[in-house]
Amino acid sequence: MARLVMKFGGTSVADVERIRNVASHVKREVDAGNEVAVVVSAMAGTTNQLVAWARETASVHDAREYDTVVATGEQVTVGLLAIELQRIGVSARSWLGWQIPIRTDNAHGAARITEVNGDALVERLSQGQVAVIAGFQGLAPDNRITTLGRGGSDTSAVAIAAAIKADRCDIYTDVDGVYTTDPRIVAKARKLDKISYEEMLEMASLGAKVLQTRSVELAMVHRVRLQVRSSFEAPDAPRLSGPEAIVPGTLVCDEEEIVEQQVVSGIAYSKDEAKVTLVKVADKPGVAARVFGPLADNSINVDMIIQNVSEDGKSTDITFTVPQAELARAEDVIRKAQPEIGCDEIRTDTDVVKVSIIGIGMRSHAGVAKTMFETLASKGINILAITTSEIKVSVLIASEYSELAVRALHTAYGLDGQ
Ligand code: ADP
Ligand code: ASP
Ligand code: MG
Image (tube, rainbow, N blue to C red; front, side, top):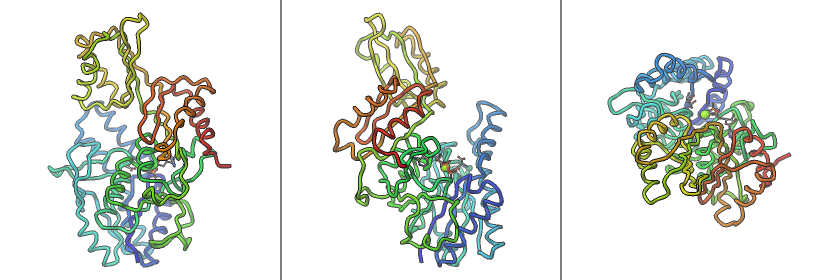
C-alpha cells in the first residue's frame, strides 16, 4: 500500500466526461489498496475567464477580491469529482483550501504556502476516504482566500504530498511527461524518463509551463518524488499502480539517479519578457545604481542586463528585461528617476522571446554557449541580450524567430527524436 497524491490539470477536468476519466484513474489506485489525495485545477479556460471578468470590471483592482473571484473555478471541479467518485462507489469528500487549511502569506494573486496541516487529511485517508482537494487556493493570515499564482495547483499538490508524507506525487496533464522542449512546437521533442530537480527548476522558471516553478522548488526541498504523466492514457493499465510503478511519464529526481546525462537536457522559451532600453545614459560611476536601485525598491524583477556604447560614442545605452506584466510599472519607475539617470529616451519592446538551453552537463563542458551562438547566427537570428548561470544560457531574440530558434537548437544539441 502506498499513499499517493494525484493532481489533474485544467484540460484533464475540462468537462464532465473528462472528470469521469479522472475518477477512473483514482479508482484504479484505490482498488490497488492505496490511500489517495487528489488535487484538481479549474476546468480548462475557467481561470482565464475569471481573470478577464475581474480585469473588465476594473483594470486596477483589489487583489483580495481578485482572489475571491479566481479561486472559485476549483470549487466546481472538486465538487463534481467527489460526486462522480461517489457515483462509482468510491468514498470521497471535497476539501477547499481553507478547510485543510493551506496557510499562505498575504501576497494575493501569487501567495506562497507557509504551512499545510495534513492531520485531518491523514485521518480521512486512513478511513479509506479519498480527499478531493482544490488546487490553487490558500488562506492568508487574516483568513482571506488567496491564490498561488497561475499554474499553482502543481504547488498545492506538492505541498500536500510533503504534508501527508506521500510516497509519490503524480502530476497528470495533457502530455505524457516532460519533453526536451515543448512538444507542441517541436514535433521531434523527446520525452525524458528522468530529469533532475535542478534542471526542471530551470526549465520551469525559463518558461516550460508543464510544472509551476514553486512546485519544483518545494519538491526539491522536501524530496517529494514527482512524476509527470498523461491523464489520457488508459486508466486501467495495471502496471501503473503502487509505489514501485514502472514510470510511464517523467520522474523528477536527484541528479545521482540519472545514468545517461546529456550536456543540454532541454530547451525552454518564454514570451513573457519585455525589453527596456535607456538611450544615451551618462557614462560615469553610479549610473547603474540609479537605474536598478528604484526598480529593486519597487520589487521589479530585472533579468537580463546589457550596457553598450551609444551611437554618439560618448555615452552608453543600458538595456534590461522585465516580465511583460511589470513593464508598465517599470516604465513608470524609470520615468520618475529619469532626471537623476539623465538618459535621452526610454524605448520598450514586447516583441521579444527568451530562449534558453538547460543542462547540468554544462558545469563540466566547455563550448556549450558557442554552439548556441553559432546555430542562431547560421539562421540569421540576431541576439539582443544574453544571460548565463551554471546550468543554463539564455538569449533574447525577436519573437518572430522563436520557433525557428528552438527547433534549430534542439537539432544542434542532438535532442531530436524521430
Ligand atoms: P495542466 O492544465 O495539466 O496544468 P499545463 O498547460 O499547465 O497543463 O502544462 C502542460 C503543457 O506544458 C503542455 O501541454 C505543453 O504544451 C507545455 N510544455 C511546455 N514545455 C514543455 C516540456 N518541456 N515538456 C512537456 N510539456 C511542456
Ligand atoms: N486554475 C489555475 C490556473 O489556471 C491553477 C492551475 O491550473 O494550476 O492557473
Ligand atoms: Mg499547469
